Image (cartoon, rainbow, N blue to C red):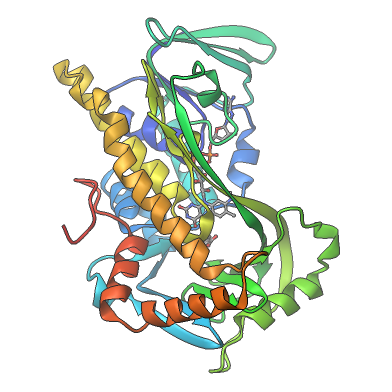
Length: 397
Ligand code: RFL
Ligand code: PHB
């Protein structure tokens, strides 16, 4: 097989890249080591930034997103039983977030890829990459048959446990990491949302988050320890804990319902620098991981591939290499800002095991400030709804 860009991974990064390249007349082959059902069924992100929504709409992927996506023009922060709202319409006019499950987005992207007739192979095995400093190729197995894809470039969009980053020779890429001493226990529940916006809460017993997927499905998370045993969390205990942490003095609390799915997610920050090694380009979770508190991972993946697609288009159309040369630098400015924001949201809203009462009171004061000073609320709103896409800079610059 031969193509211009070999794309490893059919998550949001790989599929959006394939979509953008197709629109620019650039061929690609997408390979994915899991099944189509598995990729679609994976319950993960739910919050799309304004620039992610704009890109999807502009490139013809907005039809179902516009119909079923839930546009939110604010979020709530709850602390010491006070629930305060950050009003995006007022603070960052024209910018909001949209709730649309990652699995819905991936479903749309797979549909769009299939409609173009572009190659997309699921269930591939033994993926290996080589020669990415000269003539890149990808070796793989499809249905017990060995294949090779020769390509001009490889896009490593294979997530945090993929082979792309791991294939780069030691010393060519540096990683910067941070582990957090807590995790999230997340549930999907059959319950109509009792608030029409997301609620983040800091409680003396730890963090909790109320979100949703549709008018009849809620998504909730609570802080737990990284080695938490799910067996110790029968459904009634999860609900009791969520309600204890989220309930506010105005009488609001999440509505109980049948738990459809539960799981534990560890929390990590990681950045690989540079995000490129010769003709191999890393994008999305393959290059960086953020803790989910800022709801940024998927949005960052889309921001990377937008820059990569533009650089590849300039290369094929005009023979320009400068945008490819600048790919890593262009992405990393946003990546580090998002790391900073996600780390900050995480630190403000979680209770670390070794934290003191002093720390807790300082966190409450920080929440009080960020929900009452207009300058502070604007900063939060600007970061949460996301940077402008075109110049990859904060909204107010
Ligand atoms: P993905 O989605 O992990 O996709 C990578 C794909 O590569 C495949 N793969 C391989 N394919 C071929 N050969 C190999 N050797 C391969 N190895 C792996 C994998 O099977 C997979 O299909 O990475 P991508 O595309 O970079 O997308 C990143 C996002 O998925 C991720 O950042 C977000 O889900 C993070 N995230 C959130 N992001 C947001 O923007 N907003 C949110 O609200 C949000 N909430 C979350 C989240 C992640 C969570 N978890 C479970 C980690 C909430 C949670 C709980
Ligand atoms: C979600 O809806 O899954 C969600 C919302 C906000 C976050 C993380 C996840 O910060």
